[in-house]
Image (cartoon, rainbow over all chains, first blue to last red; front, side, top):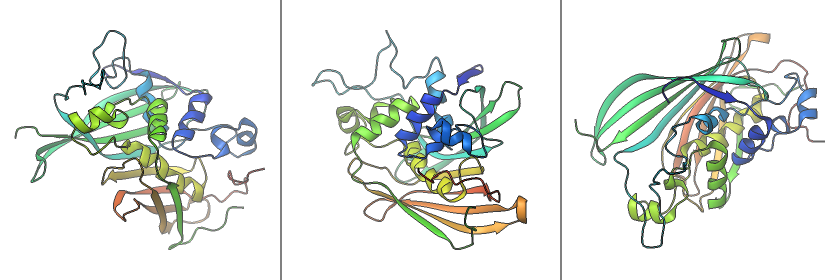
Length: 156
Length: 147
């Protein structure tokens, strides 16, 4: 993701995401219940911003027409290994205000700190922070998400 | 009125029992992360070298976050953070524990700090983290008051 990404916060997407994290809280699906709450409407669950991936045009972990897929195909073809293995090690969220259904957010990613460690199990490990900031239509920040990724097997 | 939140208060929930691959696929669909490691058994075993597919780390964090909103309500979070400690496999049963470790500030500016731990059925820690939230002092109805 190079430039800003538009992230429409759809109420159905919130409902589906809440289902996916096994949270049946009516605040994520019942407009009437949500309207009676002090928040006044359906809001996003705490980790919903992960669904930004749906809107990143070049996102590699979504099958795209005409693009080779790394996973299995026929029974004798298990797929092919990635060039490097990137694991999600840590995640932090800083909430500036709730995210409401119906908003259209803009997300911008930037790199944070990087550091290296050596482990007996994985060899050299390169850690990097990816900072994603979410802004509302008036350019006010609503959420900061910081992922710590670790790339294993890299040379020192 | 939400009950007072006090230091030492603990909230534990069985977050997933005998975790199905279907739940992992549901998370892939909602989040948009279709990494084959999470749903494609031949790829996970033969290419990635895992015993089976594994759940997304953010699936486990998403399940665990519910412990916080159970305690403080939706929309009051200030921060949420955590580390993915061990893989989560189909068939796992996950239990999350939220413990209030600090209540600071006064009245309308109270902040609650919550430690989070999620374990699998073997007692292995799969996720650990913490959250900070504004304590609910209004008399708005608790969100989980199902009709």
